[in-house]
Length: 116
Image (cartoon, rainbow, N blue to C red; front, side):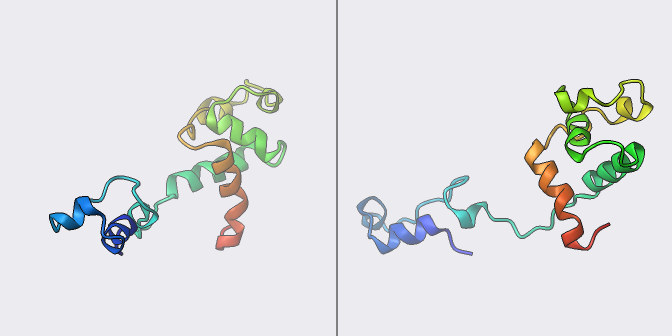
């Protein structure tokens, strides 16, 4: 796929680039095509983590509270889950690299992708 920045600079005949017949180099996040990756994303760890959490909590707590535990967030929701539960210690903070919104969308999107 072609870089939109390069295409526009050539199309508009930007004097800096067309004078020397240069092509503007791609830069990180210079356009949506350069950001796009067609490589498949492996979400096996996140899927397993969420499924283990759902199984361990056995439907006793809201998904938002479970996500807070996975992210290691101390919120009013996660405070409702007893810290004495063994699974809390094992799962707390294991999914901290993703935002709450990411986990929430992921949890609700799995059934749409043929999961559960």
